Length: 267
Image (tube, rainbow, N blue to C red):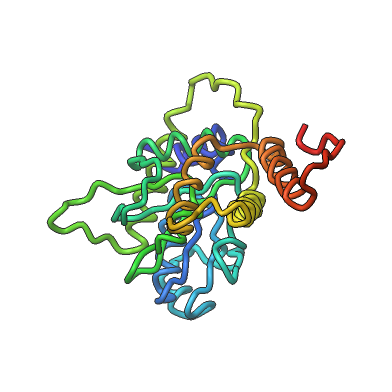
């Protein structure tokens, strides 16, 4: 098989791949960044986002990139995961363990099909954790979906570049599978950028604290459940604005009991 022809053909029919960023969080060894860049480039992926890498740039990263130097040069650097995800509508957390978090869970093949569909609407992120400890619960909760690679339960440890290779391979196969097939019209609703979602969650927690909703319950656990509930529907920017309008109206009524506010901020 002419793999170079197949590769070019895959990119022609799936420009959505260009909307998918691979986000590496607090990578310890620069060589793993280089190996991940190489794995990504072989599958036609172009975008790397690095969150607080321990050492980068570094000669080991360049050496193990083996020709994917351009991905390293173009990689964006971020101080936090929130910053790296700010413009993305959908984020997928790659984790070997559920850690008690009840996000919607996808296997790599389901993930690839879903991610390509979402990438037709705007930027998408696939998030990979630190080599030693993976993603924290807080980092996973910044995403809407959990992706688990069904590895051998007796020996399920994948290194970072291997995990990147598996998921980017599935993205490539899903893209190639679209050759000769008619694409359905995308849902015109674009998921709200995750930065807007985070501001909404902060606003929601502030209001719930004011009305003493949490009581003796853990605010952290309750907010985690509310995150899952609201993220599941992938609300668009207008829907997030409606929710924030409701919260603002609640705040106004708390500050001005017995008075009506005549406006249409929540419409």
